[in-house]
Length: 143
Image (cartoon, rainbow, N blue to C red; front, side, top):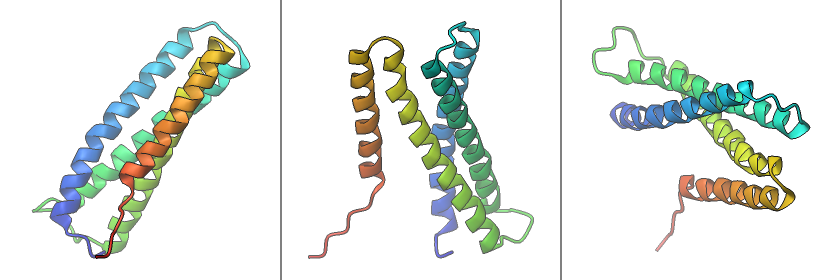
């Protein structure tokens, strides 16, 4: 891996905060859905998607915590680039999947109210996902 470990450590620390907050938010939604007595198909889909969201963000938090441990000055063991790559890839994929599932949850919630609200939240969920992808993409322009 050709990434500066100090830079990786700094970025991953920031992502841990974001993933932790999103995991907590998702778990709060799950807790709220558990107390809801509604047994509709859409509620079940929301529950499943929210559970996947929380799981993905939790996986990314623990994977990124491992990266922080390995890239912190004074780490007692040898840092294997393969081990660092595996943690990095699992964390990144889990984080991205968490975002995907969170956008799905956003899109589904409106359908519990009405078709009009469902269309609105679906559009918002799709736009949110697309804008997140745009902000995560690096655009290189050659002069």
